[in-house]
Image (cartoon, rainbow, N blue to C red; front, side, top):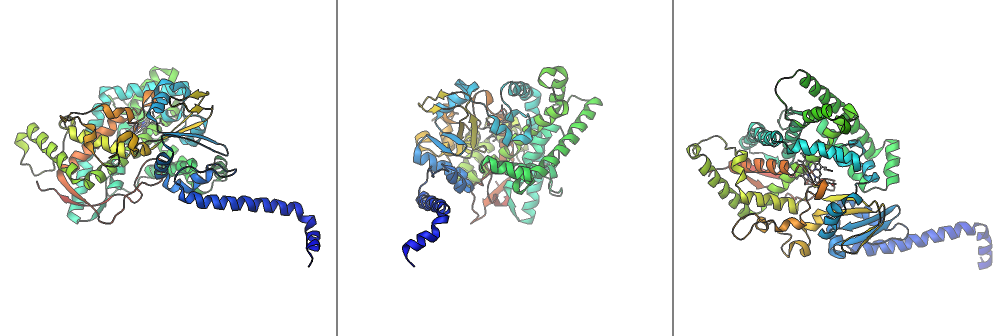
Length: 517
Ligand code: HEM
């Protein structure tokens, strides 16, 4: 057939063909870029789609991807895509400015509030006046002596009555144990107890998985996917109630059911009077009665406040415990130093009890002087920050200390996981687990690393649960390391799972024996 006749036959379809050719051209370019990008570790721009394909391609390894971005582009990088205007920064000067100096210009933002909508007006999901009122209440409750005493005694109680007996059973059966699962249940029990004043006993081996805890896991998983899925897509799935959004919807119903139940129980208990309660829900109910101005909304206010605290406390601290044990067991010299420090503390505090056959449980006073243990906790929080991504939204145009221009509505992302792995911040040995970096030459705690330590954020929105996290970590660490000997299961690979909280993908499998000293 002649070329003209082919052209003639095709003429009516020319617009279709030019459309198809254009699309093919875009696909071809995109494929070439994709292949190039597969070898590139940082941020690559696609035609039309901007950085979106990079985000989608790396969602399954989001924390390592942040490390790649920092290693490729340095401390700060701008990224654009359809409906995306992101500033990625790990520069401590910028973080100091965002979290403290010009704090009012960097709220969480409406998009964040929408993504975390299940938390309603809970502390970490609000901005401006609503946040201010919530934070004032939380500040009072957290700062009270009653609260810190309660956290210490609850941690000791759960460790002594549940955790240590549970591990003793594993010793008898010589079975392999997933420490991460145990730690998640342990922190659920302690956090729940501190908020609602009752123990859900998740840790107890015979109780089935708590439906409430499972609903929290499902909601958390869905929220993570909202972070790595284009807004329009997850909103469509939410509307259709499909995929992760269906899980989110069901989890929301379950959570609401439990929250209503526990709030009603607590109110009934308070009405009946009796001894003073130090749990957070009781303090919130008392405050609610006293100061109506911050607490309009009745049970919804209580539901949102208590739920936010439970979420903020539970997985973060549970995961930190897992990374602590993983790091200590992988570094026998560190374990030896902690053991020596504990033995000295035990000798000086309880000479006459030294020969007891019962598992030894340290109390919060004994643990206070353990400087090397404190440095090991700090190093765990540095290398494995369990809230590894922090997000803010700019309100007005601004210029950051490093000279970067910020546009209104720009999303500002920080990866504390990547920060810990930057030589320019933590030195050539940044990848090593080294508690000594938190100590001075004469073995005292050093403040110097605090300038670049953002694991608990900083400024007015700094984590109010930092002391809780340290207390529980030390309580569990001392009692388990002193009484048991753990060995990582050979060949079991430990790495972070793609989630909001830095948990382990395959758990933490160990063999456990009773320690003979
Ligand atoms: C290792 C454990 C923990 C880590 C790494 C951690 C980290 C953080 C970080 C980075 C923030 C700031 C988040 C942001 O601005 O977006 C935060 C906020 C918060 N944390 Fe923690 N946290 C931990 C444990 C806890 C515990 C045990 C509690 C409660 C008992 C708690 C309660 C909160 C609350 C309520 C907020 C919101 C504060 C606000 O927005 O004003 N956290 N946490």
